Length: 336
Length: 304
Image (cartoon, rainbow over all chains, first blue to last red; front, side):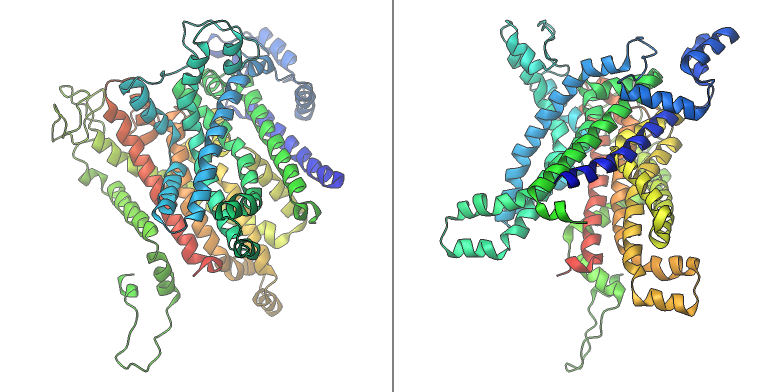
């Protein structure tokens, strides 16, 4: 088992180096002189240019610059934002809980709808239920989520007035930032109605962000269930007279879930990149919106750092999924 | 393709039916999947619209009718049949913009898919044929690219190069590269151990001939499927980039940027928001349906 984990970990190191190389090159590929780009319209004097160049290490050879960059990254130093002058890491940490909260609720939505829908489709194979689940999931899979967000907003916020249009909580509430998670913070505060306001703000963004993962999970669950349901041991269980629901839930589902768990793990990437679009539409103050705004403001250290952190999170999650998979399924652990 | 739908029946009842040509066999499996055929029909319609946009569209995509701002679709009160789907905030005909937008989406799809297909096949063939160090190097890079969500990587690339349609298409072709490399490499490796490759090698075929004339044609099936699905993700990513302001720039009639422009009118004019998104959804859905159908028709393991 340790050997397996070690092997997986050793594969992460070259990937990490590659990603840092990518983000390191990113800022150097911007057409023109980086310092002049950073200075913007104002321009810089020759002395200030040399000074900044020395300060940022641009006068040193590239490999030295890269080495400095990676050492900084490993110590959590991602440079400072050009606009706010705050460390990128600090900005990221203040905004990240909002994204986690959104992604978590989206994942819950995706799993709680996608999994039962997939099971139902597999059990009722070839019926109207199966066809409609598959149609819905293919539609969800093809959905431009930024449009889906606008559409839901149009119906539920503008026309029906059931949910708020944007943000994390109503402006009338002032919630102290304890954990960064609005659901928890609003419960901790004394404000009446703050929690329900936070929930109401979360509903539409979670549905939007969860749509594609839901479709993927439903499709995967269906095909995995169909495969397991055709196995001999299921026929045996049925022949023994075990109740149909028990065969499905206890006997079939447990084995069918293995590939589904992997797929759920892989949705983290989709959730994080989907968050960029969802947060932009709903004005959700998370890292997706932060990244897009930084691109608009040409705040390159933030773009560089943000992309690096998101990529690292995805690598770590994929690694954890791989390891969990190895624990659940010994065949994977011992292969190769 | 129409002739192939008729199975070749002869008048003499004892004669065995002629075996289907590969094309007929393909069409037989493909046409049994109704969704795939529907997808194909929609794609053909959209391609027709794209090619003949200047003939099909009732108006120019950039003409601004100052006396018809934010006009609702024709069937609603206040609508005008000369603007079937209504007009946007500066009085441009939405239907015409959608039709011209299909030109852009299809063009970007073709460019992005072709570019990544060619590069992906080349790298995949090299990795699968030569193996060893080259293979490891190429696959490591591919793994790194796969570690990033494609939209994030595309955003990063566009952020460096600057927002424009060309850069967005370039970014999309780069992010879809890994899939083609992996597929080609896996198929090449499987084909390499076949007898026909060995015998070609014995006859004296060089590496180039082996790679492109012997092996490549036998790897095409999964690549065709992936290319079709690649179309749908290219169109979706292009629209997303356009929506974020990183793709086509405002006056261009692109579906994603049309949506971004419409953001501020959500509350007043639902049609400016609804129709561009619907076009994206329908197009992407059509390519996904056709991709599924192609997979069923081309993958012998899934036949029956």
